[in-house]
Amino acid sequence: MPSERDAGAGAPALFGVRVGGVDVLLPTDQTLEYVAAATTYPLPGAGRRVVGMMQLRGHPIVVLDAGAQPASVRREIRRTAVLLVGSVPDAGAVLVDAPPEQVATGEAVHDAARPGSVFDAALTRPSRDARQADRVWWHVDVRQMFRILAGD
Image: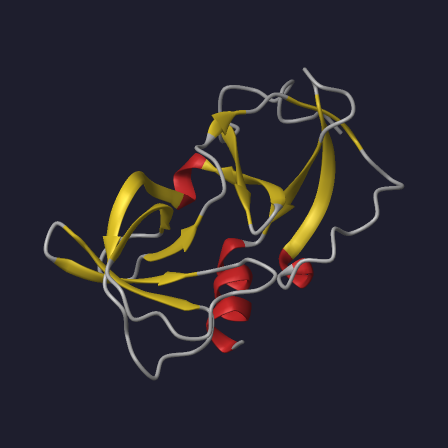
């Protein structure tokens, strides 16, 4: 089976982003937008992984935190880097640890241990980075990741 790097023109391009301490791969057809400094507004009483709400061209978007120790109460308006996934009005956003980057994946990794993140169940398979052999990227089921984070 060919890797994404060797796949034909019809294969979706991949990019990677670090979410909750895990390097994840997302097909670009599922990703809406990266916002380097999104303004988030707190939602008192929301779940512990809810950072707050942001606006995207007039639409409210819930922002989630995939980190190991999310803050339980956020009372301040803050600016933070987020990745928006999905289409408005059903888009969601998650805090990211670093800006997205293009990724060329190499061979599948068969012996990689799961990273121990809160959304491990959404990680489908690991692939080695073709440029950095010691770096592993995890393919992620985005809908499942958001369901896990929203339910925690």
